[in-house]
Length: 511
Image (cartoon, rainbow, N blue to C red; front, side):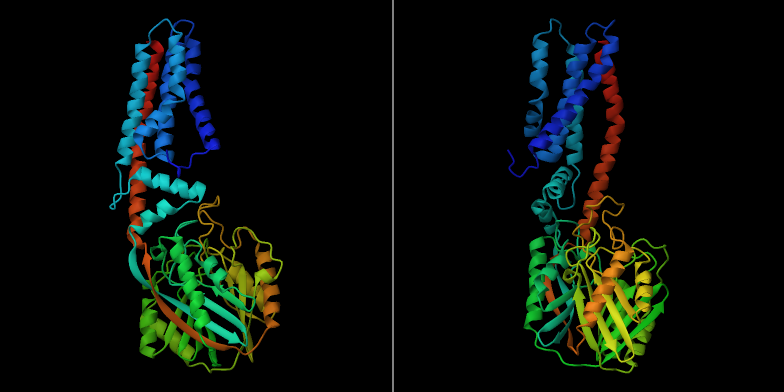
């Protein structure tokens, strides 16, 4: 009846198994009473058949089929013929058992009708959303769920920032996407960083996908849109001519409140990285750095803001707003530094034997080293969803023993494995499945590899605009409100259903 249903042989027999256990429970309860209540067992057998029917109806309509009528008929195929066979062998009528059973079925039907009446502002019903989620979750078929997200999507303009460095045929590409990874696998732009890595990765190109500001409101509704966006980045990089050798100012590391700000300037282009490590932090809202862009405009420079996204479980500490004057001071101090020639080198963990857990995704770990006459700085980028608190500080200490400074530890905030792991967050942050020592060992090996490739690169920092549909806040808020309402309805009905079932079971037992 529905070729796209998630029903399977395994799930079908699991449903029969569980519903049969539910059927048996009232029969077992009736056995001790059968010595003085003649028809108790047969009555509870009939009542149990309707319980099984009701349970199968809930699962069929909630998970497998949209049609309530089809669900009602299909869920009757298992218990009702068996019940009728037993009744045909019985010499006594069981009117109270049948009436109680019908009452159970009516209660279930009213519950399903009531919960399905809960819907979003766009008219998406709760059971439709549940079925779409289950198809996505257990079958990896997100089409219906993506359609619901797409109904909320609004055209938006996103800016993609890139640092493209080239030496002969070798390229190092730092990408700060304007689209946010998410919401979860396999919906929308969940694997954005992996798509970009796949499009850019070549024998002579090492990409590092960083994380911009903003949150899930900047997700796109369909994965095909994210794939086209990744292709547009690759085409843009391929279309760019060689940059030119420019002096580098910095890096300069500043501190405002709990926020570390690392800046590197290439003439009038400033790469600006923010981190709250070791304190807990998640996505930096665009409003939190809006004054940075205003300050940059006043100073006549362009900035690329990177949210390092590298401390998921640190202590809570309020982040005070950073004022325009504070941003201006950081940028001005950077621009006052003496510009010097520099060399670069890069490497990726795909080039070495790096055994990691599910806290690192397909893009692995990349390092980019910047060397000046008096210092060496390393940017470490991991294709991960955030990082365990303390990893950055330990990595920084380990690199310092080699005479190397940590520019920043950044993650891509990939959502390829989001909601797929048994943690409170639904994912493992960098350093939770792969030990700190293994990660640090990998970085050290990559640093050695990158140092062997040091050369004077031609650099350009550029950006381009893309028009894409973004799901915005409305869909997330609407789906959250729908879920809360459906749970509230379920809780209220549970308070009624359980006493009603006990009452009907008792009536069936004694009458």
